[in-house]
Figure 1 (cartoon, one colour):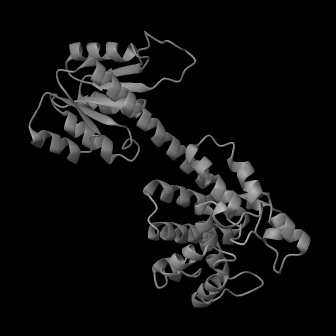
Figure 2 (tube, rainbow, N blue to C red):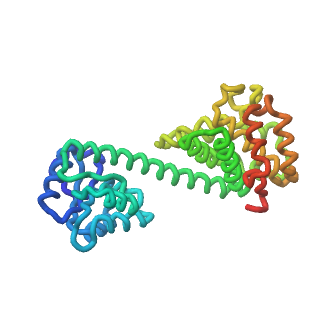
Figure 3 (spheres, rainbow, N blue to C red):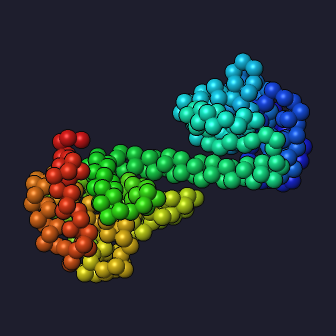
Length: 337
């Protein structure tokens, strides 16, 4: 189905584009533009054909003519955006319509961009390049999500406490990040870092993870290796998002006074996101029941954070975390999970 008459590099994984237009001359012209840039191009000549083509081989980008007989471009776009399997494919509506109502309608059905007829070749090619790049970033994020979910499930299979702990720590860390005004991108890193911060426990013997009592010095030395093991597990993953979580994974047990592990970092030498994670991690550890002790009351755990501000944890961040007292983030108990 894919036309590959100008395949400049057969080893390159090329982006795929679907052109949808009932005018075959338009399709042939746009296909020539894209194939000249090395894209793989498929064509559909009505809305029903377009939906079948996407179902058979989801493209990286769709150029969709607005006015077609039967199912028009707006209807096709809405169906694609309402489908969880296709909603992230960028859709550009190509139209000769100039009324603002038509563009508003396109936005309402989820169109990612618009292109006006007559089409300028340079604008068309640049628009395709930009949207394909965005699609690749989205695919990378989805891939990272799948990896993170798999790793989280692996930890859960070994230690049920850890899975619920990760969820609660993640909520607390993101809430603290929001409280100090972190941008959305860093909040996303915090979220992923929260779900992965204890992934290194996969490499810790189950006899230590599930021991119904305090650890010996030797056992604790092994447990202290989990941040480094976590980094070793995640570093090979080809995801820029996961790469940004590595400082969280490695440094969430560092202390403000330099007495933490694994690197003995102190103060602001500890990455900000790791300092945030450390506070949420410690709070949840204190309020959670373990086989050898009952969890603290939330108020008692907050008192411990106050006492350790400036020595174990970042003083300013502890103050911001304490300001969350009374919120659902800090009041969720293990039983509520």
